[in-house]
Image 1 (cartoon, rainbow, N blue to C red):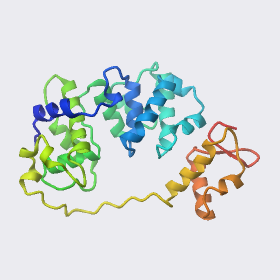
Image 2: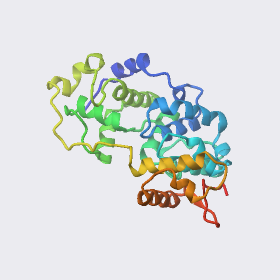
Image 3: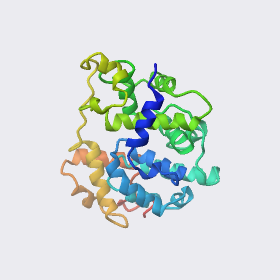
Length: 293
């Protein structure tokens, strides 16, 4: 298994998007915030929110001192708002247990609340230049095509995917170069080796790509579920949170009832928000963002 490191990193040096969390002056905290926000959310939507968060909360302790409800409000339309509470919990742990400094090694990062395997490795690699495999959907797709000759990666397998990515990392004492290769691999999948319309003519490793050399055979593995949003529980949860984000205190349930016409689904979604800690109920039966009553 191999992808030419010099070729791919050279391409990345010229073609990488100018993203603020890649700048040399970005703190590890800024990288951590970006990685949480970028999960299942496009870069274009993350950019303005990320900048606003870093301006408002430049250190973990700044976010940790904020009320959870205000953190959920500031999360806005990024989706999957539980990430906001997880980031708040991680910031609190960093402030209290790590001297307000984001840890640099994977195992310690994994010990933070709400930080999973991908985020821990991404922060170690992209904030601290560590030689660790970082695997997201883009990396899996590039490896499937360039190395295995398949049109897509198929269902994820944590061990297999990490083993594949680890085997591709350049050896040697220069860990930062391995981290840059990881970023380049991810960027190639985001910009060129895309899921639906790969731009193989622009690919720096096209001549050695196993999929390209096999004639770009169609993917015949398990079909991926088509994600929809409108009318889903995730959509309804978002509508309910929108009502609370627009207020500064508790609201009557009748106001939440206006957000969605299907009472059974609406009430179930409200119950799930309560269970997740994204909404709290007051003693008099009203509802508010966490800590705002």
